Length: 186
Image (cartoon, rainbow, N blue to C red):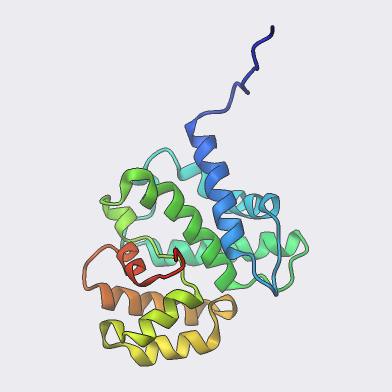
């Protein structure tokens, strides 16, 4: 009886990349912008995020994260267009990127690293609705505006306004902790 052979290049980094690509693609695909996991993985690879998996020290610093995140989103939108996706805007790109980074770093045991604490959390309608209902951070008007716009329709400025609100509401805590208000797990 022959042993099943493993691909020689299959290691924990590839394992993380595949899992996080799957999770991110499933989370970011919307009714108006459907794409499969293979396409989502290719878009992620176009941004170069998979090259950062080895160490959270490779991530942008807290000071750099907003500018680098905007660049990642721009590349992701361009890659999506190359794959024939028309309604793949900044909000969808941000969700794809943020879920990917959450899976690889936040849930990968690096939640206390300063670069990981500064990563943008995934933004969706469930989170925005809870932030609004509970007036988190006293920013009900910010959350109301964002939930009416819908996360998948955000442009760069609208998205950044939400992230700015998350930063204010978290008051120095890791940004991933805003997901205490996310009810998508229910």
